[in-house]
Length: 388
Image (cartoon, rainbow, N blue to C red; front, side):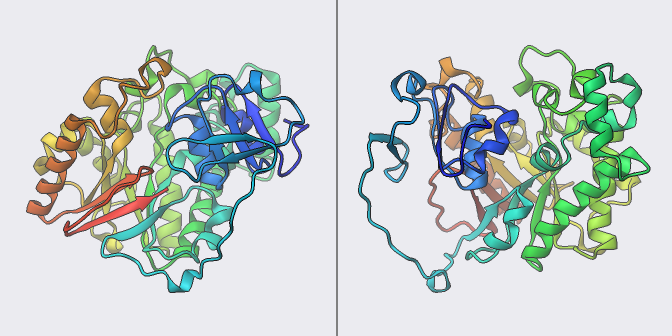
């Protein structure tokens, strides 16, 4: 990574969170492995980098120092050309772009991009994923800040000490950094809505944070394991969720950024929703107080099937097509072997989305489609689209 100069193309087998500093320098990213929902694909979208993933043999075919052109302008398939290809450039006056009837909101997780992106035509932020802020800005597992005595590796303890040296209380480091990053985005888009999704780390992703290994349960399939709302009320993580709530309370109450709305991910059943909402209430978060609205990701078939029940506790639903596809088709979205099976436009997935939309319209509940796929929405009241 240290050899990569700004503007050069990164060619690698795959990426993980350790590679993230390279993404901001790279002119483009090419990987052998991965699909639409791989780390490389998601991170490239976040930082606005060009990426072609899942090539199979790029590291064997492309030579170090070779001049190549990477193009993702043709649609779903990326192309890599030998040498320098020609292309046309067109300047677009953003002030002349009309926003369509369907509200277009942005997906944004990098505070340093907030004021730049706020100049784009938009109706606010439809999805700010808290785990990206924790991973990029805080870089320490929240429970490691509460129980540093459980960290056995001296190197990890030293890194945590360096990161938190300016805070008398290590928990304050987590709360204040999360508050600062969230407030930066909320201020950039104020008074437009900024929908903050509470953390949705999978257990294997949490392990990548400093001190994470000491608090990581061993799971065979983290994608359908200990994640989302289930973490929040479980003793192993509940205090960390309360720290997230403290940070959001500072953003909304102390800083006055009440355009921040809160969203819960991966809520498996209604009882789980009740437990988490009770926890949030204990921290002073109640629907309707200071205009607070609570949102829920609709990404599990049970969410669509029992939408009328969930609607008693939430002001809006946000359809998450990746997890909905995974759980409808029983296809692990991380599996290279199931790339052909994982099909967001499968008829079963579309039927669940149609069901969710029709029920939301009947209930008069707002609905969001948090998508990185090209979709066309017509004649759907109370609907907006969060675009990555």
